[in-house]
Image 1 (cartoon, rainbow, N blue to C red):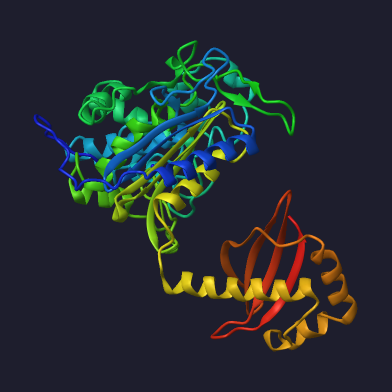
Image 2 (image 1 turned 180 degrees about the vertical axis):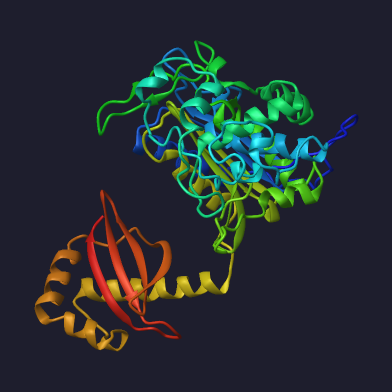
Length: 466
């Protein structure tokens, strides 16, 4: 959800320092993490790419690509769906650089007949703040998707409906806005969007695998899969042609997507201020930060700035995480649209590639986690240091409650893991936290509240099956 320049007669990425390779120990952890996630979520395959120090240090595929391709390969293009949005945004930003449009122009200047087109700015199409109703909010194929459609058909059906809100007042994901943006790009450039992207972005970056996902079907390509509830994993029927267009039409290898990530990291292919504009999150009319730029989410996680996007096509889920300041990226492409393997793999691989950053917040979390583990160990042994408890929690731990904790936990043996889950949050004047306790064959969840400030006491400490 980007701005690109260019005068590209001779283009080359800036030289980067030698990247730290993936060590054998890291490779073993990555292989185990991917394999475990695919098995846990029953996803047939994943293709991943890792960027470190601005270089691709691993591109590898796991599992089964299709019934005809029993072994996935890293050179197979997977459908990246909405990860494509940043490329549509890039096309419009490039066209702005060429003076062919202005992102602050009204949409009606280029496409008449769009609902609210005289009030919607082109920029708002790219930031999901236009108010245009999303034509595909469902996580399944609806009936009309069995028939081919042209972008104009999507606009005629959804782009002329009443706006869901006044432009700029809310953030709401809208594939429709990106279809309109794609049509504007084609109108002012005078060529098909994919042709424009090939000429100005993909070929200069050496991204040779990119093609329209409607053509990435058949015996030579990964098959999309899915599950109904907890039923068997089955191949799914792809949507008919035209349904994703500028909102998510691209298919490519994980390594080729990583080449784009490297351009972002190095501020190559387009000027630094263009990259900055794409990554500048848009504020709503009331001043609220949307957390979204032009085709990308931008957030701070664990003390690091991450530029990211996910994608969903029929039978495919993907995620692309880039840490520009750390010169790192993780791409995960999967061929099932059931389950969270794609995000689970991305998180685990990210933890391996970028070890936890030492900050005051993480140090505090580590300290509270250690204290929570100590309290848990006390309870399973039938002990209790009441100095760690508020008066309310001390009241909760009656002799009967303490006996139930000890009798139910002691027989489980020694935990194999005790980790914090998610981020702390405030509620009722306390800091709420969750912890995961791991045993062979089962896990427990702990809901803990602590006081604010230094040396906080526990206000809540409840243990339940995960």
